[in-house]
Amino acid sequence: ARAFFSNGMEVDVYDTVTGTWTSNTQPPILASSGMATYDRDWIATTVGTKALFTNGFDVHTYDDASDSWSAATLAQGRRNLSVASVGAKAIFAGGRNAGVDLDLVEIYDDSTGSWTTAQLSLGRMGAVATSVGSKVLIAGGYSSLTLDSSDVVDIYDSASGVWSTATLSARRLSMEAVTIGTKAVFVGGQRVG
Image 1 (spheres, rainbow, N blue to C red):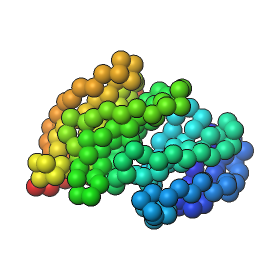
Image 2: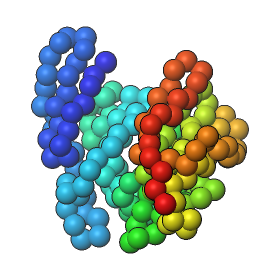
Image 3: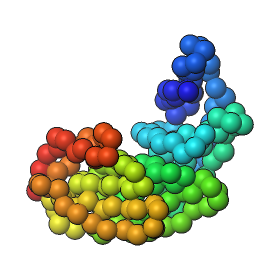
Image 4: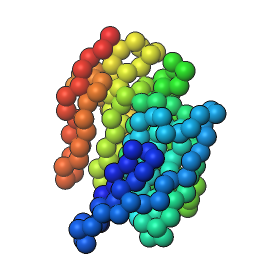
């Protein structure tokens, strides 16, 4: 098992089996909108033997099995998106681009190496995401459409490919989400609007 630590330019890897640190090769550099990619915040998720890192524009994938990097560009760049994984799929959802909160969901399927898209029920930024069982839950956030925090939870079932919705007990932005056993837990956050 390995843990990754990155500032976007350099990657340090800690191997929990050997107790050793290595500095990995730099991820490939892509240009998005004419800009270098390393001036933005990064978030990550994993599928199988791969770690996927995104700054909301580019996706850098480290494959532990082959000790190699690859890169792709998201269909639409954005800030404040949500990222989670379930089974062999990595989900990149929502976010904001040019003042517009997006409902776009991009799904990478590691078993086929392909990308597909879907839509959230409400475009929003700053939602949190977690997975439990075969489901990814994308909750809360802020919508410029309603000018308020959101109580919407979009639920993607990777086993059936079906999307559904639920609601939180209150509208919230800036929450944290974790999975404990068979439960997704959403805690904290604030109301804006």
